[in-house]
Length: 220
Image 1: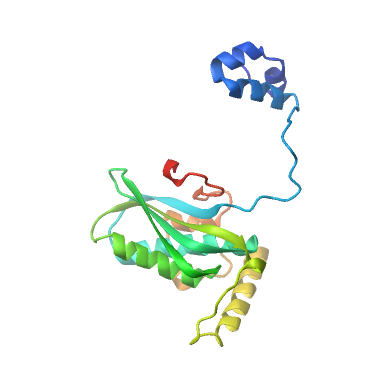
Image 2: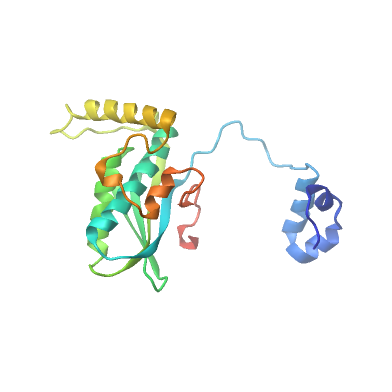
């Protein structure tokens, strides 16, 4: 429509915009003119979900390779949880086959968490329950749902590991601090070292598809 700037959009004929875009056309013109009647929310809305997906350059068929991708996805997803001081109660994986058929499977945790180990463990279990090798996989995703602020969550420690949990939390905090300061690749576990695209989600400029604030996962 030869509209290239906000100024041109602000001056565009509203009837033409309505004809081309429907009610969105009127909103576009108002927005370009700085008009917005929506109520200002003082507090940021809590994300409805947080996650990452990554499309693979070649089909994966080996469990070790697939688990490595799940580990990187779980790592960055829980990093974002902790950064926003949230915990999640539901883990979901997304699998896409080479024929582009896609399905999701989810598991609801007994208690909410932001632990990468727990999220990765259940992502692996969901994979093993719903994937049969050597079926090829073209895309993988890990997303977390039923989020809530960590201060409001009752996190129940395992009876047999409650002594180790504070040590794990302290180590996680140190790793987060180092990665905040020196970059996402500053401290990695051996399992995260890979050349596939799942490693790219550690790069804020080159990362997988964000699943933030998804209202309808069926449209993914």
